[in-house]
Length: 390
Image (cartoon, rainbow, N blue to C red; front, side, top):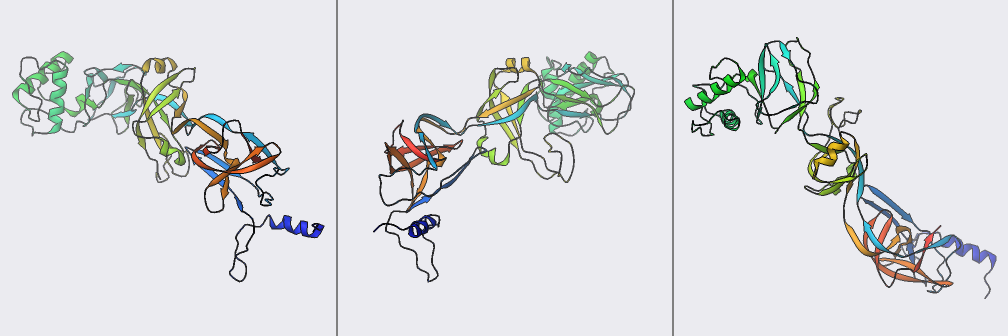
């Protein structure tokens, strides 16, 4: 029987009602046709949110139908799909560390910003006496001389005396005991510096830092000022590293020791490796500091990346960079926009493949989803046209 205008309008309205909604008697509407449920798919992989939404078609139960006028088509592509992300960051010198003076006195010499000090070299001067850089991760906190108790700080000092060449012929063991041989090595070191040979090392005469060499980044004191609680200067390692502050939903891409590609500001790239990830948090309203967000007491998560080659990085110098983090990769894949996907009644996904003037529903399996695109497998081939909303 011909369909009246009123019944056609009712059918169109019914198409906009969500399928399988319970009625007032607890039963479900029964339809004598296959139901296609529109998909709302969000792919928030590696910080890229991909949304796709389709609207219902008037499916009259046929697998050979024309797409509605409010839908278009797109070609199924074959290629590579990656969940890689790109994050802005900066090149900077590694491990910036404030150096706080120990003891009392007047600062009588300071290094130039940018200068490099090697272990055994003078960092600055107090009352005309040099304060020397040594390698170690324990600050000097007591005098080290004859009669001092054993400890790891003694071992740290002896390691430096050996490396600096002041223990030759003494048979000095690098252990936690301050021996007569240790005192002799200390006197040799003091003679080389041109200071009084006491055989005892005071905390203010050396600075222990876990650096192979220290580059002066900025000065925190002036000549003639007295030592105080503030830093005399700030030093860093000589190597450049890339530092980025990813969003929370990007952190899963940053794997320990994971490889990345750093795009330099002046062109060119250098490979890198993720060394550390330090999570941010509530700083109690404190402002400033590396990685600070500048408001709300929140400190951003910071990721440090060591570079495989310093040559290119040194040419670029401290500057802005972008970091590509390679995630999952699907090679030689069939790719469609996520908007082409349909959630099927009973589970799974499908696409509508256009055959001339008609279309057919094809069930597919999903693979990688990234950048608003999806990898699919099934009875679909590259070059097929699939239906998408306009």
